[in-house]
Structure formats: structure tokens, C-alpha cells
Amino acid sequence: VAVVTPEGSLFTDSTSKMTTRLRKNRKKRGHVSAGNGRIGKHRKHPGGRGNAGGQHHHRIMMDKYHPGYFGKVGMRYFHLNKNKYHCPVINLDKIWTLVGEEARVEASKDTATAPVIDVTNHGFFKVLGKGQLPAQPLVVRAKFVSKLAEKKIKDVGGAVQLVA
Image 1 (cartoon, rainbow, N blue to C red):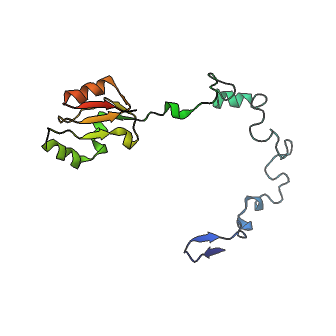
Image 2: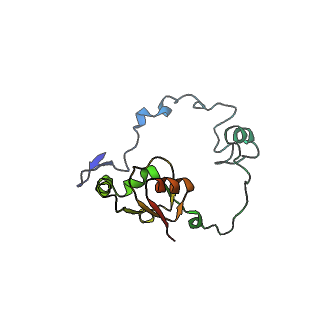
Image 3: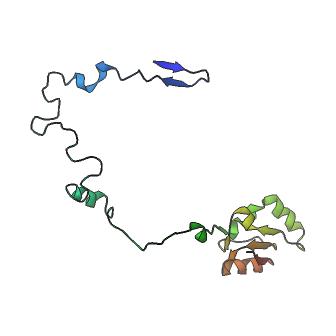
């Protein structure tokens, strides 16, 4: 039975089941083993439950379809702190998107002053040198800067400041 709640959502209550007359088992009536064979018999868990026998009687299946499932790889690292290696990167071609196109156009009018883009405020730690920069100076503040990025920033008349 379908019920509409006051919020308007439609759900079926737990008493509604599949109609008995539509079940596959109605066609099997009168056929002794109901499609499961006389010899093998329909028993509960003949191969074991779940992933049982992965190294024994189901080994061929595991080796064929799931190679490398068993065993270890690499060295153990006790008390691994992921934040030690947390270093999100941004490329130069995306660096102006942090302050927006309007800010870039505004800064291009007066090239005597360069806008400061602090990438750490936007969640990035490292600046990489992919892409081209528009020919206007800017000051980039970051924890890490690649050699290529630094060269490209300086080529457009900008500067790099390293922050802790």
C-alpha cells in the first residue's frame, strides 16, 4: 500500500510485499526439485559464506579475477601523520582565478603597484609553473614555489615571497 506523508513524500509501508501470483516459485509447483537439481541439492552455503576459501577451494577465481588480493606490499610506517605530506598545489595559469578577473583588470590599469596573491589563504601551499601568466606584475606568497614558477613570475615583473 502506498502512503503519502504530510510532506508529500511517497513510500510503501512494510506490509507490502511482492504479489504471490507473480513469484517464480508459482511456476515451479509440481516440479520436485524446483530447478535446483536432484543430485547437487539446494543446500544453505555449499562453498562457505562470503569470501571463504579464497586461498583454498576458490583459489582459481581469486587468482584470475582478483590478483594480488592476498599478501602485503611495502614497508610499515608507524604513526603516519598525513598532514606532514599535505601540500595542495596550484599552477600559474590558475593563479589569477583566486582573486578574480575584475581584480586582474583593475591591477592592469596601474602597473606601478602589484597585487599580492597569498595562495595559502586559498588553501594552496605550493605554486607550480604550468601555463602562461598575463604580462602584468604580481606578488605571490606561498610556502613553496617551483623554479619554473619563480622564473615566470619574475619574467612578468613580479616577485615571490615565501611564508612559513
